[in-house]
Length: 333
Image (cartoon, rainbow, N blue to C red; front, side):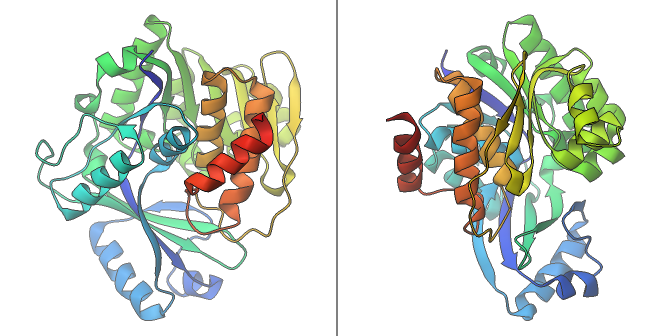
């Protein structure tokens, strides 16, 4: 196989800012949530963030599945990202950053459409929580035109970002890719992405899992919301109906893995958390690297947990190459 993972999702340039809870309250921003906003609102918010004084901490190509594809590539895997950017300066930045991190895509600046590339403002509070306000821009029109079935056919796994369910054309593309994968013995994985997204687009998420998937990634709140249960233990039992295996991340309490036969508790790594942005994306990318490169689900989850602990102890969703090497040496050598 040419690729370990074929990922599909929104292409967003992540712009990260340090703020206080008061700033969020004063600007009517829902803390800890991903909220879709219009372009005018994002322009207004950018001025407020610049005047606030926290400053721009990091600017990187992102989107949930893109972060996971980059993580997998950094660990030594091979990933492909299906996405959509506009023919603008931000789109060029996005594609250059994506390719610099070893991720393949068929999209080029010359082939991109006119429009606005999506941006996500990631606002991090002192408790390490991340709040996202996102203007999708042209990625709202992501469709099956962005799929490359030849590359998908040469992949071990299809990984679908849950945020795609917010767009009718994105939902259609996800369903088409999942159907193709199931018909060509390609394993399938989805992420539930965000509890508010699950609540708002429940029918779309249920449609994605209607044919069964091999793997689901979610956190505790997403699992409870998706299964409509009252607590963690009930949710993890109910998830068995939708996926052959799944991982539920539990923040500072580690994670729980269902490997198809038993539950395995994945121990956390105690760190001083600074920024939770991208922690779930890193977990998914590291885990997918492990299971597509000869490691057991348990050892892959252990790798992912350690990688997450490094991500939350710094700003941004990405690790440096030396950090990646140190993690692999610690666990595999």
